[in-house]
Image 1 (tube, rainbow, N blue to C red):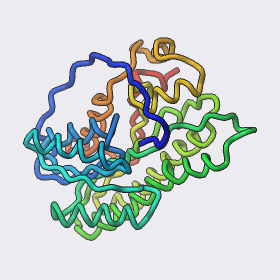
Image 2: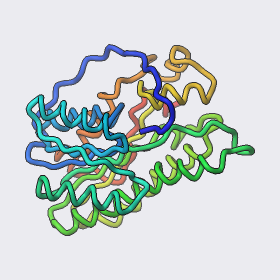
Image 3: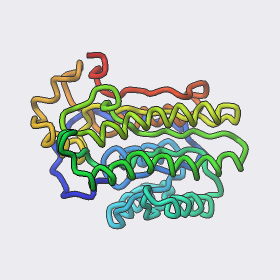
Amino acid sequence: MDEREPQEVPTIDVPRAQVFDSLRGKVAIVTGAATGMGRATAEIFSEAGAQVVIADINDKLGQQVADGINKAGGQALFVKTDVSDSASVKALVEATVAKFGKLDVAVNNAALTPDRTPTEDFDEAYFDRVIAVNLKGPALCMKWELQQMIKQGHGGSIINIASINAFKPQFNMPAYTASKHAVVGLTKSAALENGHRGIRVNTIAPGAILTEMSVASLKTIGTTHEAFRDVAFLKRWAAPHEVAQGSLWLASDAASYVTGITLPVCGGYSAH
């Protein structure tokens, strides 16, 4: 979740696809799950039968998401987590296993909004923070998630959330673009190393998704919600639950022979 000021997010009316019991009996961690795509992913995973751990730096919003899932009949736990801190991530995995007994799926979604300056004048302090959360964060998450999955010995699925910026950079986002390019490489490395263990590691690259982060990004590149929607072949923005459906497929046994890939969920933007 972004540490900067909250943004007002326009609404989009896209019907939710039917969710089946594809994660019944599985335990999943979703980082950055207090808002946006992370929240949508946690909620859809719960609908699909998973026991879900909500990880976020924001206590209030993270607990609200967990409470909502529990009230709806699911099983969720909130664990305050700073993904840039190894001890915090280790504690997250330990809390997950202590509560639910195992770890089957992880969606490493937590990230900061893009930087706002050109490469020749980038904010060095914010550059360091973006790299710490957006790149080191997924790396630390995978470190502790993989150790647990390897110990269990029955495979698993890890999904790292990158961005369409991993392929199509925007103006004034050097740190964000670099971090998302690197997440793709990090995913491929982990997939290569852990395939023989039955652990699948993939990436999703979201495009124009209506979240707090994307609204903040529009200000950075100097455009509007209405204008930017035309970059997608579908000529609209996506709702967070549409990205969550991609993670759901990769997390499920339906994607049992899929690893090391980057799945663009971008309405065709990556094909330009």
